[in-house]
Image (cartoon, rainbow, N blue to C red):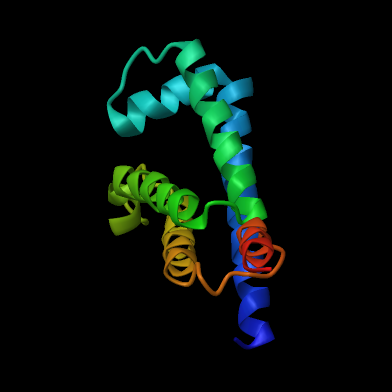
Length: 141
C-alpha cells in the first residue's frame, strides 16, 4: 500500500480518537452537560451522573484503543455506531442547517462520519503505528 494512504489513515485514526477522547472526558468531568445533551438529542431524561461517568470511562478506553489501532474491527465498528447515532440524533440540524434555532456546527458531523466509515472500510490497510499490526507481525514471526 502506498505510504501516503497509510499516513492518511493514521491521521484519521488519531484525530478521530482524540475527538472521541474529548467527548469521553466531558462525560466524566461535566455530567450535567451530558445529561442535558442526552435529554435534548436522545430523549433520555434524568441521566444519572454515575451513568454519565461510566459511559465516559468506556468512551475514553475506546478512544485510546482507536488511537493506538487496537482491535480495529471492534473499536472502529463501535466508533461508527456511536458517531452514527450522534449523527442521526442531530439530523434535523444537518438537514436544515440554516433553519431558525439550528446550529451550523452540526454539519461537521457529516465529514467526520465519512472519515470514520472510510477508516472502518480500510482498517486492514491502517497499519502505520497500529498495535494490531504489531501484534500480527509478532504472531507471524
